[in-house]
Image (cartoon, helix red, strand yellow):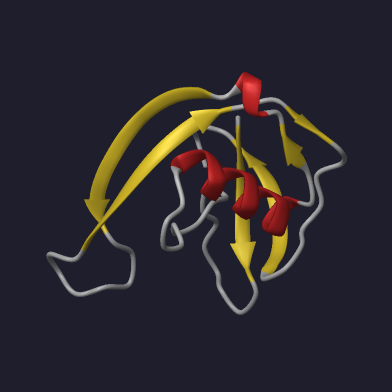
Amino acid sequence: QVLGARSKNKTKFYIPGGKREEGETDLDTLLREIKEELSVDLRPESLAFLGEFQAQADSQPWGVEVKMRCYFADYQGEIKASAEIEELTWLSYQD
């Protein structure tokens, strides 16, 4: 299963995360975005790169693509929706 997050006023679930701010590394972005969206702290020493994926961006004109760099990581705290996140759910392959 993978954790899906649905933003307020949206209907689709996405993998939690977000865009880099100027000067941020992958690690900086992950730590900030996951804390903002899920209210947990990632354990930096547990970070493991999964892969980079690129595809058509949802709800954007044809040809506009999104590129994602995905990681596995352990965390501490209790996962709960925060900031712009309305709902969290565990999604399976069938979803």
